[in-house]
Length: 203
Image (cartoon, rainbow, N blue to C red; front, side):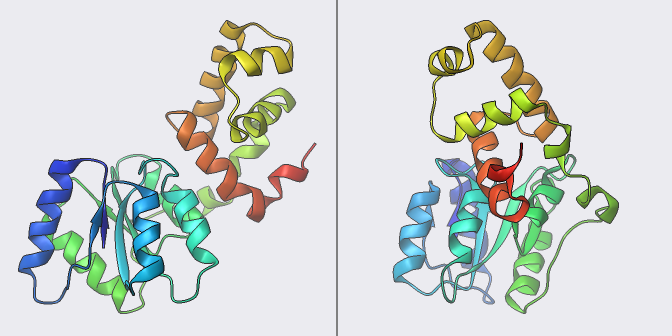
């Protein structure tokens, strides 16, 4: 099954998998919720998902699927030049395919994942041990937890006793430290990290 918010990418990927006799394309979706709804009803062996898949994001989707029996193995499809492969591995994906690579690399990754392998580009294992949560200040941790509850910038300003401009400043620093680009990714990071790192219990 394929899930990507970009209709053009989704269409192109559908055509690629339809042409390959090794695969049977079950369904496509433009949202994490749509993906989740389908795999709850129909057996899916491998899913190819965008990391920034609305609304939950891939990290939260992986977390939810971990609790399900016979859940599909997920391959994250995205930009391999940055920290995304490491984030995908840490979240629990089975593989990563660089969208700048050729189509055969994507197909080969999915075939290997279906066969029970984990497929990732080279990742320095030492980097996996560097928990970005440790770099957050107490206020940034509070901010991240408040974000996870759906607070707006105005609500965060009132709750933390700071101006909305200061909220934006702290959010910018928070995103940089977590290696994410926006609020949705920060929330996804929080939920992915909470159970494995005990984030909610930290001082």
